[in-house]
Image (cartoon, rainbow, N blue to C red; front, side, top):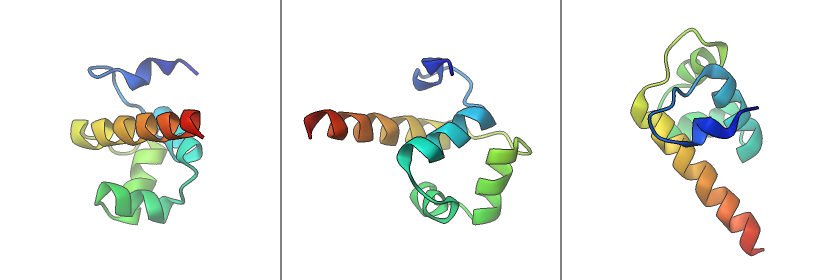
Length: 74
């Protein structure tokens, strides 16, 4: 998968969102809590039914970066 989703300004698609959930090793319920949205919204993001707002996309990118840095330090 193209890692371009990590850069700001690049569309954060449902494919990227599903990759984020898998990479972060979180459940949909945990993702909902992290992003402050409902579980049904998480399902809609993952299915591509709803466009992922910029703020949630930025949060996903940030959390992924922080998780990646933490793994490098271990």
